[in-house]
Image (cartoon, rainbow, N blue to C red; front, side):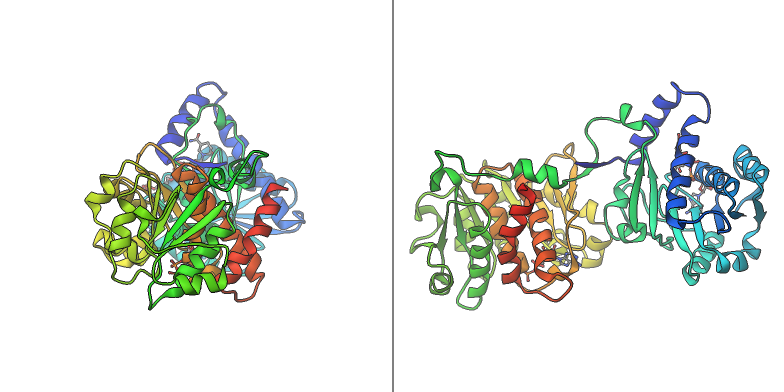
Length: 479
Ligand SMILES: NC(=O)C1=CN([C@@H]2O[C@H](COP(=O)(O)OP(=O)(O)OC[C@H]3O[C@@H](n4cnc5c(N)ncnc54)[C@H](OP(=O)(O)O)[C@@H]3O)[C@@H](O)[C@H]2O)[C@@H](O)CC1
Ligand SMILES: Nc1ncnc2c1ncn2[C@@H]1O[C@H](COP(=O)(O)OP(=O)(O)O)[C@@H](O)[C@H]1O
Ligand SMILES: [K+]
């Protein structure tokens, strides 16, 4: 599991750790890790040209100490001081002793244009809001240069706790972060500003709380979560997933939801709705029932909503059962908030940003720019597990104390019609297999993202191909 902690939590853990160590020890650990990462990025340090964008806080201090280490190895290092009077004094002395030089923001254009490497030490976890004008000007010069950009702790200008960006932020190729990930490094829009992220161990794990604020499943977590049939399994023990989806107008949504469910570990898939012929033509193994969800026979989880059009009946009926329900697409609009809140079994909702915006009564852009706030608010309002789809898929449980999950595997190739229907069936299958709602939804997002990558393999793909790639993803994870 990859963990991320909010600034307040990081600060408190740092205080506890610092009290156990000699003064400055943490900053030296950070600077040593940062210098090593920069050396890797440069490949050859001796003779390279390095520019340090230096703010007046400890983020600037880390940067100057790392610059001193690079200067001692033969790099030509120039520090651009945004606030010369308030620059970290000891770190500045160390740089100058190592042979580094300083300059002002107004004279920074030439050194930045000639740099091989730029370190962004303008602001770290002490930042608020977008970059101020002089720092924003430096960010423009960096964007126009060919230098590799390494952000120190975070790309300056992003909101560390949420991944929001208000104004200008600096775009990095690599972010070297200290002690723990910060939520903003994992969540869009800020995530794309961070480039690849390298975590430096400064000993903080010993003082951070065990429960992070945000977390992200990794391969090993998936391998442990995926259901696997045992010797005594039968189709009911493996889980029967019910799909109440599709309409005469949108039969394809039902077919794709069934496709996702069949390839995700359920022992059987039951279908109810007007698209039975289309479903059977493609998947003869589906159990089709003429009645609604309540009378369809044994089912351990229902998926409802994809392609439903305006028919609220199957949605309402599925919600009235006492098994987990996945609500997607039209189902989100057709479901009554009070009915969802009143359920005793879990509900998982899977809106994209547009659907989430409609449910929250805000503009789509508001959801996209503040994903963490939106997913938490929906989970709270509906007392449900909410999976917010998009460039970074987030999953929140109804309880605020539970970390929000961020899916690390997504790919923009998944932005293709019907891929969300595959995800619904997939999630339903994992719910039917007995996974807890947060695990089912985050494991499904993980599998779906990888299946999108496998299916696309660098070229356009379609939703059916994503479903077809699921078994190979499954095999690779279990291997
Ligand atoms: N604590 C530790 O043990 C360890 C901490 N470590 C490091 O310390 C960093 C945190 O340092 P920090 O607390 O000094 O804050 P920091 O991020 O440098 O920012 C403060 C400066 O930014 C400025 N500023 C603010 N907003 C701005 C904006 N929008 N645009 C432009 N400027 C803005 C603000 O200006 P002011 O408001 O004071 O005028 C002030 O000068 C952390 O990220 C990590 O790198 C590591 O060494 C490991 C051990
Ligand atoms: N830019 C993106 N990057 C990664 N994944 C994306 C992106 N855009 C969309 N997706 C994913 O593609 C899927 C699209 O689902 P959805 O919007 O419901 O489409 P549909 O309704 O056509 O099935 C979701 O899993 C979503 O997370
Ligand atoms: K920074």
